[in-house]
Image (cartoon, rainbow, N blue to C red; front, side, top):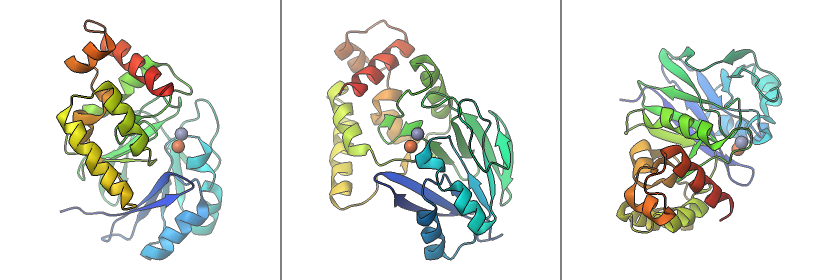
Length: 256
Ligand code: ZN
Ligand code: FE
């Protein structure tokens, strides 16, 4: 039985925010805050009182509302050590491998540079919950703004080493674009074809495609399938290093 309740909400054009709540202690964490009003509305809807804000990386769509939300709620703000740009309002910084406790549950900090240098992800092993920010998306991965493909490939490997039934909460609804691209490099993947119609139906209903399980991503996310024979054949990279296959897939997505 899960010890936590989760409330996911939308903000801006395609961002997802998450409130994590422990009924036992009343503690509530908000993961990222690009829009304080959206987070405050989510708190109002749930009736939960915010105690913590967890920040994944410095981009404005994840941080622009942090100061206001902190001021309104008195929540403690934790986030990555600054590696490229500062994040206003941080009370505590986290590095790779750091752990902290939320409502009696251990939270692991996983540094996943690639999209940005400072990106951290939050993993709760007892609950099998993973918050991937802009590193791993449903059937996609973040653009490489501050690091090279090799670095992102290594970061994704840290995430795929987690148990396959881990639930992956990512920060954007990019899935319809991601699935179109995935089909272009992995057209014979039966699991992908099935999932494509599933996510299209969800979006037609206005429903989120986040979260997903790590297993679903392993089966259908081309960025995690660099060892796949059919993908390698299509890319004409049968004997290339995994990191080079990843770099090629990332490049093709950028130009898709
Ligand atoms: Zn970002
Ligand atoms: Fe983002």
